[in-house]
Every structure is written in C-alpha cells, then in structure tokens.
Length: 175
Image (cartoon, rainbow, N blue to C red; front, top):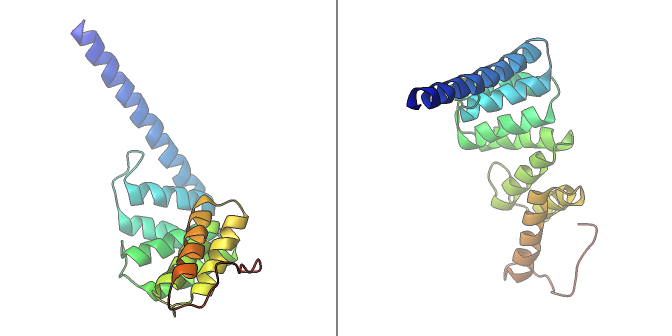
C-alpha cells in the first residue's frame, strides 16, 4: 500500500513538473517568435524561479528587455522593477523611472503606480507629491487596487503633512 501511495505521489509530481515545463516551453517558443507577452511571462518565471525554471535574474532581465523593446508596457514595467531592485542589473533609480514612464504611458497601470512611488519618494526623479497623487489616481480611476490604496494614502498623507498647505475641506477632482 505504501509503495502504491509513493508511486502515485511521484507520478503526480512528475505530471505537475511536466505541465510546468510545457508551459515554460510554450512561452519560450512564443517569445522566440516575437510575442512580447510570452517573453514577459517567461521572464517572470525566471525572476521567481517558477514552473521548473531556476531563479535567474539575468535571464529575466534579458526577456523583459526583449518584451519592452517589442512594445510590451508590462515588460517595460517589469524591467523597471529589476533596475529599482538591482536584480540582474546594477541598481539604477533613473533607469527605473524611465521604464516606469514607458510602461505607464503605454497603459500598464502598475507602471503608473510605481512611477507614482518614485515621485512620492524622490527616487530617480525630483520629489513631487502632486504628480505622485495624479498617477495613483490615474491607476485608481481604472480600478487598479494598488493605485487606489496609494491614492487614498496620499490624500491622508498630504492633508496631514504640515509642510503642505492643504485644507481638509478642499479636494481637487482634477488631481
């Protein structure tokens, strides 16, 4: 009985591993054919060490670059994250900002949220709370949960920040 259970467990793991490898192979084929979304998905697998692939930041960066150059806003934002964190590349906030802008301007809301964060903290770009708030709102208006979370945080933070001159009763709907 123990041998049967062990055999079934091993077969299950092999099947899961086989499916994971098939998925990675499919993304690789798609990426090789110029599908930017497949490149980002495969890059994510390498970044996280998922689907039977080893964690490899350098391969992830290469794939994110290919995706970004292929027009993927998601790829640009993911590459920006790698520069922000210094994973597989030298840490570079200025490059991260450039890539987040590219991602945001091409419609990837997470790029807007991360660009907002850079404006809010002054990393890689001059600190600008108004721009941070605008970017968070842009993402929030399109129902991005992270954008809404940071937007709400900015409203409270800006209202209670003694270095800013905001009134609790004033809200500018254009920002």
